[in-house]
Amino acid sequence: MSAKVVVNIPGEAAYDVRIGGGVLARLGAHLRALPALEAAERALVVTDGNVGPLYRDQAKASLAEAGFRVSDIAVPAGEDAKSIAVAGEIWEAMAGLGLGRDCAVVALGGGVVGDLAGFVASTYMRGVPVAQVPTTLLAMVDSSVGGKTGVNLAAGKNLVGTFKQPLYVCADTDTLATLDDREWACGCAEIAKAALIDSDEFFFWLADAAGALAARDEAVVAEAIARSVVFKADVVAADKTESKGVRECLNYGHTLGHAVEALAGYGTFSHGAAVAEGMRFSARLGAALVGTPMALVESQDALLDALGLPALSWSAEPAALLDAMKRDKKARHGQVRFVLPRDVGDWELADVDDGTLLEHLGAWARSKER
Ligand code: NAD
Ligand code: GLY
Image 1 (cartoon, rainbow, N blue to C red):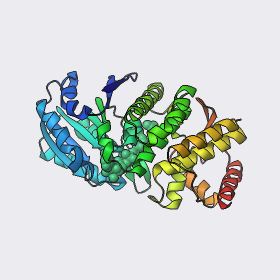
Image 2 (image 1 turned 90 degrees about the vertical axis):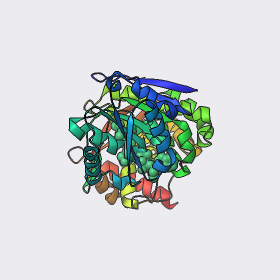
Image 3 (image 1 turned 135 degrees about the vertical axis):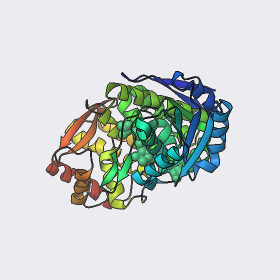
């Protein structure tokens, strides 16, 4: 059984997101059926050192069966591969393989591979088609859809990139069997974010389904992915290039989350754990600034607990957190910007002044001492 979500973004070719167990076997056939790839001869699978040994052969076999001559390249696993140096190695490899404009890049992996391969595809020969084959829960629910690509600079994450929508997204939930619990929880944090920003319907469904999602129940996982993809596709359709104040909602929980990751030291907490902490903080900030109901704060806490994302027993100096937030690329004119939930399914973007923010960060830090 598989599900299909169609992503329809104004000015872009519509594309399918296919979700389910075993859909990787049909990757080649789906790509071959696309008018843009009808005559394509070559495909390059870009993957990483963890995912390659697990799923590269399946992906390559499916592509070969559909008549593609397939090459592959593996980058080191982890965020460090999202660099201009590694992008350069892939460009050179593509040129060395004689790949022309009629090839397809297939990004097989988590968000790192998806962002990197998407960036390479959008720049090689001024742009070749890319298909996303996400293998982490986070990539299935978030990064594989919406077209943001990029690499990191020493000065910060994702500072160089493009918008490049994929031709097709293949989310084979069977690949999640090898994902560890830490990465699983990262995907759960993004699903919780999507549900809270989206609607009562999604949020209360997830509140009921949270235990089953944490336990990786197959049907619940597929439904959570499909709902998150529908949500993300709607947001991106409304604001493809994050210029209309809509796509920023995807940053809910990330303002404090990024600062926590940076100050604790990258890798100390998972991205999901940091984002979940950021969601808890933002909801409380919302209660003070925009009347977020305490019932939301409490039900979001319960949801995050049930998803295996407990509140952190960690804090930092408010001034250091503020400084880290100001260095985030989403800050505007030195003002830190928060997505605040007015209610489930209703949010606003708020520039929060330093004094107010320091006061609330102080209360947050003190709450960790108890
Ligand atoms: P990741 O790609 O680093 O994957 C996490 C780890 O899991 C890696 O070690 C990877 O090798 C391993 N892995 C992947 N699939 C696996 C599987 N099926 N079985 C076993 N191991 C597997 O991390 P991620 O969380 O998927 O993505 C994070 C990246 O996504 C960040 O760089 C972030 O900036 C980016 N991102 C992009 C967008 C976007 O819209 N483009 C949105 C959110 C995040
Ligand atoms: N930050 C996720 C997105 O905008 O796609």
